[in-house]
Amino acid sequence: MLTDLLHHHVAAGTVAGAVALLERDGTREVAAAGVADLASGRPVTPATVFRWASLTKPVTAAAAMTFVQDGALGLGDPVERWLPELRDVRVLRDPDADLRDTVAPQRPITVEDVLVSCTGWGFPSRFDGAWVEALSRWQTGLEITRLPPPPEWTAGLATVPLRHQPGTTYLYGTSYDLLGVLLARVAGRPLPDVVADRVTGPLGMRDTGFAVRADQRDRFCAAYRATPAGLELFDGVDGRWSAPPRFPSGGGGLVGTLGDQAAFARELHGGGRVLSPESLQRMTTDQLGPERAGEGQLFLDGHGWGFGGSVDPATGRYGWVGGTGTSAHVTPATGATAVLLTQTVLDSPVPPAFLDDFAAYAC
Image (tube, rainbow, N blue to C red; front, side, top):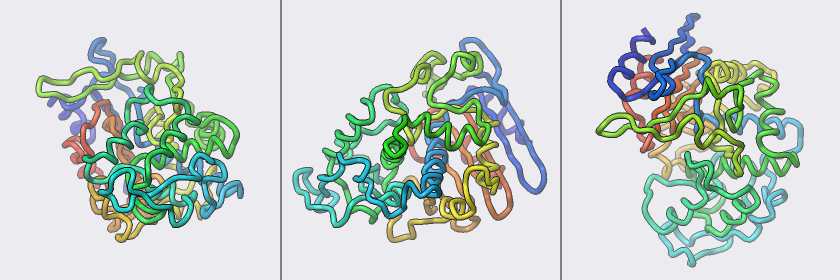
């Protein structure tokens, strides 16, 4: 049973607490185990608020597709129309070139490049070298309080040359923070307002946002990092998400509940309240092909990439995982949904045992 799986990992000390939802073959399982905060022993429940980390990406992609549906954005539009900071970006002559050895881009970065993470910015499978170090200064990850506001962030990112020509190569991460800035510019409103107006509000995702509200504080969990000595506090309930961030991260900034993930999954199964059938098809279909996916294989692990999440070539399963031990996937062909929310920070793109075990159980 799903409950047994969660209790196994709580007992093993790999997670402090977890909630999960599994819908398949006409059945529905919801389970919770462990505690939201080791210090207080407060139990995890389906109403516990978790850091979603990169489960934010599909939500940001969905928000972007509403602008495409409205005609406010075209997939082929150059993003420099709204982000003039990017008009003079340069491209490395080759991925291992000196940061000063650059050429002009062959074409501007487009909206579609951002959605498929082919802007030329983002992490490759190797984390070494001067270029990755330069990019890391502008990458959010889970340190959401350290970045400057969007205008300064965008100008700073533009000083880092692209690793590849726009549209040619998948690189992980940065494009979705850039997408969040783009949506705010198009709307003329902060990203949290855009996401609330376009996605979470219409879908009734009342507990989802870029900071924990005062009325949610008693349901928010702490986050931990696994160490040889056991779980170590990474971020407390009054930590990084306790106030609105200077830089709302479209790649990893949301918090929310299991119920809100279920509401978003229903939309991905054709709910039709936010996304058109055409938008859903684009989001959940591989847009890369093997020729653009090679340098991101550490992250993709043989899968393709739609908009905001990976696509399993064998089953069509769409979704993603987050760096706080989260996972959410839907399989459009079968109507299956699988969501796991934990609070154990991941130190590698390689999934830990608890994510692999959940994925195996959900199959």
